[in-house]
Image (cartoon, rainbow, N blue to C red; front, top):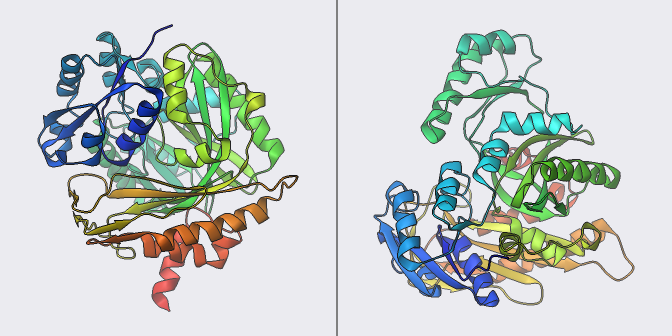
Length: 459
């Protein structure tokens, strides 16, 4: 069994602080990396050691593989946790880490390459009997070829880059005249992000829900599912609020979870991962897999009572996973992503935090890196903090709707208690979402928020 003594966190902000809390609880030493802009960041002060890896821009610091490996060597870290974003799904980075005899707290480089590629992942799932969104069988790089395939499909369709996440490299096509234009636009965006031009075609579902299955594997063929999340509240493919468990048929959920665990078990998948689906007319269709910890992982931690970061570390040390039969969903949880931006114009609003008062009370959790006097820099993602609310199931009760309704009330109270001054934040938007009858009744989809905001503007 390989014991991990010191972990370098190749990230910043709230996820770096989140990882640090688990490391401290487990008695594992920590190393924070930071850019010149983050010298006074919370994760730097929390860690046992810190190393500056470059100037403010991410390409020279948080995405600088050479400098990060040098920091790990300098501090004698024996493991690296990539968090999310930055290099977390970079197969080359994972491979370099392992070749330096440093444990990568994530999947193997080969697994990132396989499951991070949407077309390869889709084929694995399809072979196992998991329903997939209809579309092209292979990635396409030629606009003329794309046109020939797309013109014979029922519109609307979606062009989607093979190796981009977060809704990037995607274009919806609603009429044949714009097929080539939209394909080239998706391809150009994909190349700018991933340096790869592969784009595939899928049927585009109107008003689907976005459902996620959280899994973790031990690298030896054992994979368990830790429940589901509903991430349908989105704007421009970016998640705004998440909750779990998702409202889906239990028979379908059990069938899908068994199949995806079988697929990933066969690949001897290691560490945490999220398998994503679209739900349309009661059916689930696989779309992609994220081979990393997710922003919304606290939702799963709340409803299962498990620490996903600890499980990643346990797996890396060769320790066993819990049994699938021991995983119990114990209530309902919601997470609000509090971003440093105008709540309804959505323009970034970096600046100095003058005051920060966090909510409290039983089953309210705050994951963040804010403190009064901290200047939120303009060079990174606008996520400032996360508020997570959890309501346990009442003894002897399995009423999904009642527990969810109580969670909405608790979530509203937590957000109302939260005070952040000096910058604009998305808290007013989050409160507005909770007040909408469609949200309260669960009548949401990935298009719901944008349509609701348009109706709000008309009033």
